[in-house]
Length: 263
Image (cartoon, rainbow, N blue to C red):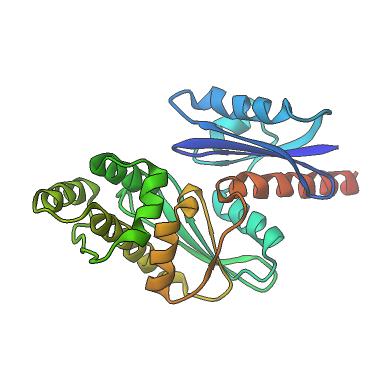
């Protein structure tokens, strides 16, 4: 038997398929685009191409979960719960989850059993999100991979004072025009994100172990800047981008077993 979770995010959609032991069998990551109704199903189909068998139960999460539940999923669950569930499976001692996605950032506090006891999210501003990174990378003429490593090459880190993405972009352009080194500006960008996210984390309280999920967790510069800002070590799953989908799949497994038990 197989179980699936589909996480429809603002930037990417992730599908994860697991077995009855909770082990990942396959996953897919595709761009979300404008066709929200179709993209979740497409991501699931991509993941299922890599395995044999039928899916017993599907849970959708992310900002497109409502449409997914109408179209193909058995149930919908918030991304807060799904990220907590996925992280708890990988890091049983996790107490704080930091998830930075394409358009939102969130901090989740867990108890010793992995239950969500508090959470906080950013406002509607894109600062401190993956979108902020994409804009800054484009402005600096770097790929996201190059931006990730540039942080460690900085010698005289500059400070980005603007919290708005649009104003921060203008500030970066001005710094470059002043002759500031690109690596130093990148360090400022990473630290700007770290300060923004740290403020959200402090709302729920910092308790170790701290685990970071979402696509931005693959950016080593941001992770390091956040560790320095929070003064803690941050653990990263092997594939942080699919943790929401993985958690949804784990919940699909649980709900399927519960329904059979009730019958």
